[in-house]
Image 1: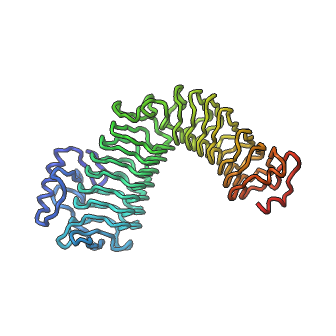
Image 2: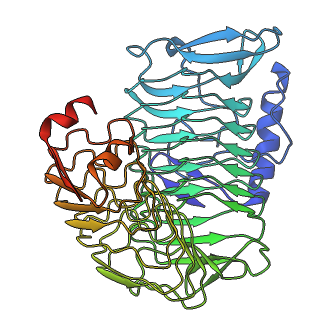
Image 3: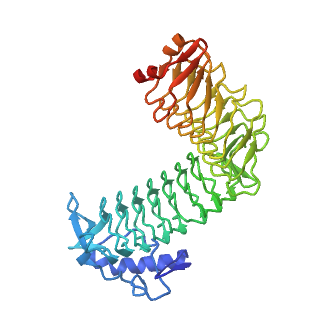
Length: 466
């Protein structure tokens, strides 16, 4: 059992069985189904309006609520009466006018910034989209045992919420459900959880993560930017970890994957695919940051958030995934001999990176691969015929770029906001430059007004038509 201010949540299954059964009997006169008799229920060892010691639920705050009859006429959805009225403690009843209350409606309590504590009865099965978004003062929440779905953005930006106990019958936590709950430190997951959505817990203060053995999917960026997160335990059941699921977790030190997981593995605290050929996520808080020999692929956002000035990429690596090092404090990159692919945004937002040379082995360079860096000059090798979209976007220190005569196209926003770039060198002729296709906003907010070609310099007026 762990206790939070005003409430306590019991994890002992025997106690849950007894309390759930007694609570069901107390509501029998209302003919309300509250799930199996062993459903978990909130209890407290402190004096609290949410105490289950009296067996019955707390007195509902009906003056703060409105109810909408379901189309089938068999249940109600609940909403706030108004942002001005719905404040302080909110207790939702299990029944209204003889029918069960089963749903917290879409945006039902959105922006009720005065709510401080929330009690949901065991009859609630779904918390719909953005139901409690921007309830900025909400600190305590009791979720009922009948809950099965927490929809997207349900508690987004409840910035003072401290802890949450996910009931055992919840199987889906939607996209951004708890995103930007900055004070959220503790999350206990129920035993039936299958999927955690994109950005579900990003920008929270969670310290450790232990997932149930029912979990199969962790969405992209689900726990990104959790800068207090130090440890993650992944059970055998997990089949999919989305891109950037733990990106920019700058205190993260260790992953631990159950040995019988057929998709993922861990060694030295690093999260790999099963064969340890791909780095899925390298803990950004590890004291030693390296790329192990034998690894062939650096996954998306795999080294995001690392605090290291230089890194050696071994010869075994053949591909660097999208945003693999974005963001980081890298200044120097020593490439191995066999890197063939550099993904989209691979080094974007490496704010200390001031020089970059494409290795001879590289045949593919992704969009925005060098955006938001401090590189000062760049030469595009002859084997490349195009400048990728956004390649130098917001490279405000870039002064010199050389393109070979083989270049036939420049991507959208390739040089946007390159405010130090005044001259571009094109190794082809003026006529050949005229046939180079230029993408949309290819030089927006970029002051250069001339191109030095092999047979002369294009005058400033030329760019008016581009």
